[in-house]
Image 1: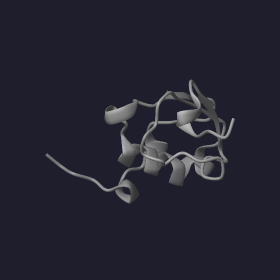
Image 2 (image 1 turned 90 degrees about the vertical axis):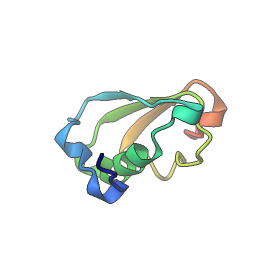
Image 3 (image 1 turned 45 degrees about the vertical axis):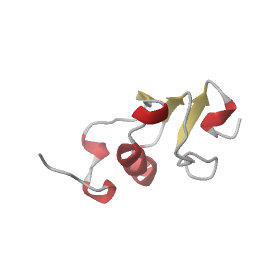
Length: 80
């Protein structure tokens, strides 16, 4: 099994402008993938992210400038 850190994951290989992403919730939240998505989101652009319950604190309005973040609850911290 290979373990990768966020800087080692290239999400641009899998995502294109206009894609919609649903983020796993609560204890299943993929924090390493989210960090990679936030870091590379500006390079992709025009992404829509849906997150319901986020306990990691990774999402904040200033961190996902390249994405349209939609939340089910305020706990997702999308700034809405």
